[in-house]
Length: 211
Image (cartoon, rainbow, N blue to C red; front, side):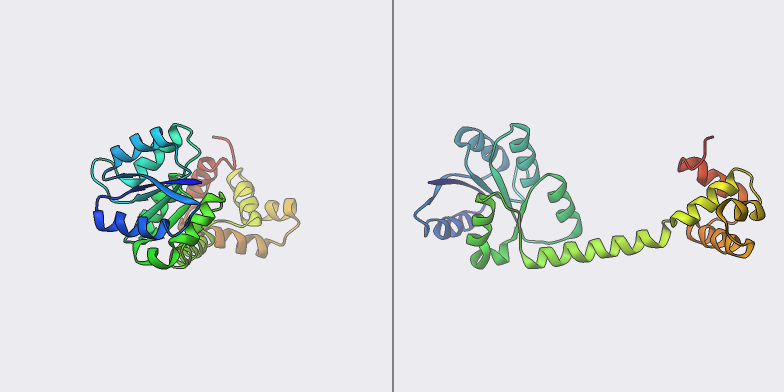
């Protein structure tokens, strides 16, 4: 029998979750909490297999509940319920080590699947959350690719910062002077700098060369 804890400050939400959970003979709601502090106390007492925790709760929010559960090294999986899928909430939830997020609007159709996954120690995120995470990841990757230097650009910057001329950089890297100038210009454009002195400071700051 898998024991589940429900933590939400709205009775109608707790009742709805309980009704869905109790359709399964192998699941039981072992306790209900109306705020974060009660949720932590019940989790420590019950040591449930799963805690379904509302993101926004009085006294202590769902993320803090999750952190406290991890702090006490409980084996309890946590499923965060939230009304919103903002980037900030998703980031906070993931950083807190939570492996399950479910929008309240999806609870009726996805709760059972989410519980099954987490009880099997697999992560669960509804499709809209996964889409948001993928979008944010791709956006961040695009932004980073625009400012990160290629390995060849880093080599050129390092040698220039060490005092090499374009000609000697080309000799070291077996490149033409024109190619060196192209890499140098590209690096400076990405870094939004316009002088060799700034290039040197960048190289020192990023440990390409010593101070």
